[in-house]
Length: 120
Image (cartoon, rainbow, N blue to C red; front, top):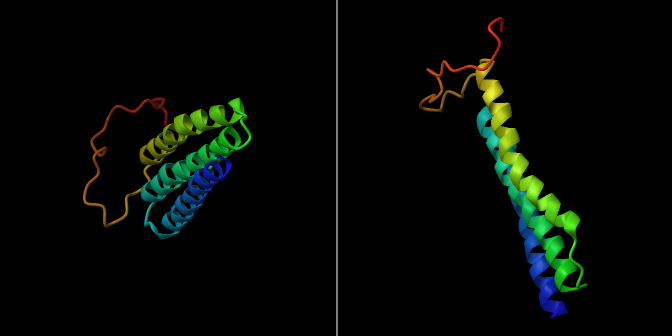
């Protein structure tokens, strides 16, 4: 069971590393802040989740140790990464950051529901 547990954990950790590398490439290659933030938040969060899951499985299957800290880290990364990216991109849209020219439409262009103070 130890060899199988180590192999499963290694697969998760390697998958997390590959997804994180692809996320970094996406941040460098994409044209505007919206697509870059999508690459940075979604795929890097998935990479971190794979890596933390691999560490959790390693300690659970090989050492018979259940880490509550790793479970909490997995939960909070899963919860906060997409929400944080959404808030940052919503603020970028409200402050007037333009889309790249290759994007066909702006779905929020006519959005008049701004929760900003009237003076801004």
